[in-house]
Image 1 (cartoon, rainbow, N blue to C red):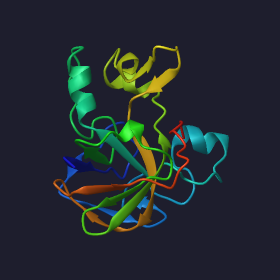
Image 2: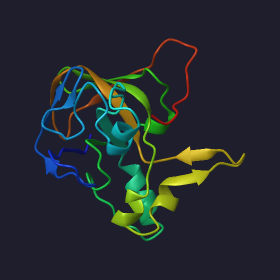
Image 3: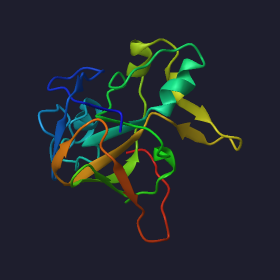
Image 4: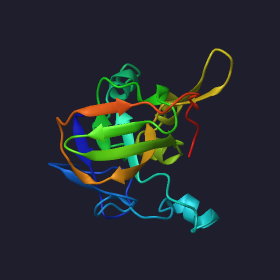
Length: 176
């Protein structure tokens, strides 16, 4: 893991921190998106009683290099993620994957982040870089994954992330 970020107020980007504390069943302590029920504004407008499947947002650092090739500069936390990873194929993980982070925190993967127009407000044209189509024409979302905290703990940049896949059959990630 290369960075951790959080913000107690609604904003697109989140400042990097020396550490964040994951709270079981809630998310990142002090983060605006922490809670048992949805905290993302668009989801709250639809139904504020929905369970919060988006407690923790993870992005792979490799995405920054990819969009950099198209002329965009993005740093950890700037796309609103809580945890920036390196060397893990986050987008290829199945639903239910457990990510053991550091000394004991565990995040269960729930699905893909559904990128929104706020990405273009951050940098015009960036949305097209993080949403595309595959060879078959299917929509591909590359702006990270979401998860829920199963076991709490403090996580820091440099912590190791251990990936435990769920039993087969695996369900591919879809937007949450």
